[in-house]
Length: 223
Image (cartoon, rainbow, N blue to C red; front, side, top):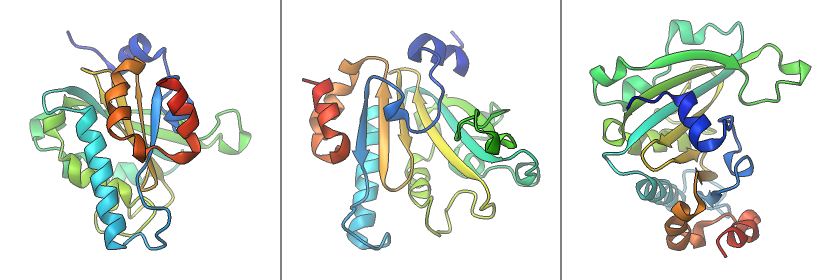
């Protein structure tokens, strides 16, 4: 049965608005620390190794190659920003294996999903949402996770590197397992699920990676 993204969110996440921070917006979630906060330089070899290990291993715990997913890319910008008209986001050209899969890409423009829409200062902001229904195996997810981890740093793979006025968020929504993975930048990653029991194996395996600030709340959830 074909299911669209909005229907999936309604049936499984009570119409949750997909926006950061996911961990604080949903009752069942884990917030992980990805980088090493004691390291001053992002390019430190040990720091890059930890970022890659943690972001990838958490991803592999949440997804299997055969899972059906939505790959969601939200680009936040001013309403009159023409960047996406001239140069579409490279997330899909670079990180999707098949042109046939790319043809399924959907695009819509929403009120800002990053800032509070009630704030007058952000009336001229919008979010371009790109939705791709695919399998995990259709995505070159390892280099994509690396690119996301450079969100605040210069790197050749940095997403939207020629459009500094725009921000973005990329969400991996697991339709099969009803989980959502959001690596928001090099600092951390949120994973939420419809059912808290589905998160317990991830909590048990990687409890030492949980962000200390939220550790008590997360431990209480899984007591």
